Image 1 (spheres, rainbow, N blue to C red):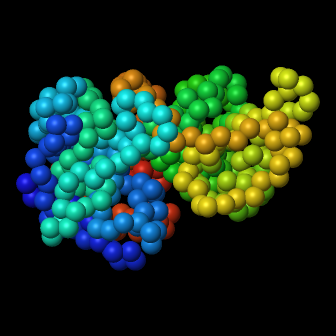
Image 2 (image 1 turned 90 degrees about the vertical axis):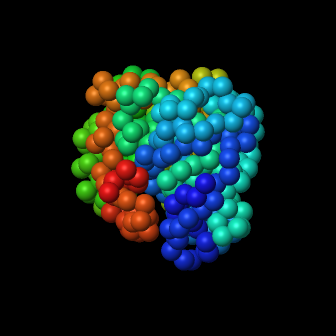
Length: 352
C-alpha cells in the first residue's frame, strides 16, 4: 500500500513529506493506521547526525488502530487500539536490533523500525502494545517514549520512595514525566532545573516544589542549599555535556562504611561522546552514576499510565501543548529545536 510519511532523505536538508510503499505484514509484523505521534528530541539527533543512514523513517511513539497483522502476532486483533513504542514487550538482554520494516521510497529501502511520522506504520509486533479502545487516541501517544522514559527512570531505575529528594535537569516531555512520577511517589523536594523561566513556571503545574534557572545561579549550589547537602537523586533528561557533569555533584555524598552510600545520578537524555567527572565522587563519597534507557515493562506500565491519566494523576493532556499536521512536520522540528515547546508536541493525523 502507499502511505504518506515524513522521510529523512539527506543530512542537512528538511524532511520530505511524500508517498512511501508499505508491503504486506510479515508473520511477526503489524500494520497500523496512525492517529497521533509524539515529536521527540531523539529524532532531531538523528536528523543532525551526518552518520545517520538515509533515506529513513523517523518517530518512535504513536497511537494507532491495527488494520492488519502477521500470523505470528497473537496479542493483537484487527481493530485494536495500540501504542507503538521502541521498547520490546518481551524483555531482552543486551542491545536489541531494530531491523527495517521493508517499506520503500522511490524503490529505495527505508531505514527505521517504528516510523510513527507517517499515516501508517508497519512494525514488529513486539513493539506494539494493546490499550483499551476508549483510550485517548492522541495524548496517549507520548506514553510510547516520553512517559516511559522519564517516569520509568524515576520508578524503575532510581526506585524513588516517599520523602526522597529529587532534582530533574530539563523539563521538556521526558523531564515532566520524571517530575510527575516523583510527585506520585511522594518525593520531596522536587527540584526542576532549566534555562527557561517559562518552562520552569510550567513545571510548577506538574509538581515541582522548587525551581532553579541554571543561567542565573549555579544549579549544584542551589540543589545543595535546598536539600541541605545534596539530592538523593538527580536526573539529566537533556543529555548535554554540562548536565551530564552536573548531576553527580548535585547528589548527596556518602563516606566510608558498607552502608554509607551517596546519592544517585541518573543519565536519561541522549548524551554526546564524552564527559569529565571527578573520580573522587565515586571513591570518597560513594556517589552512584547510572544510565536509564527506556526503563519500562510496556504491557504493565502503559495501562498503569493510562489509568493514572484517567484518575487525573498523570495529566497527559496538559503535557501536550501543541499539535501539528503531518505536512507541518518541519515546523514542528524547528519549534522543538528552538525551545518553543513546553511539554510535548504531537502530530495529529486526524487533524484536517
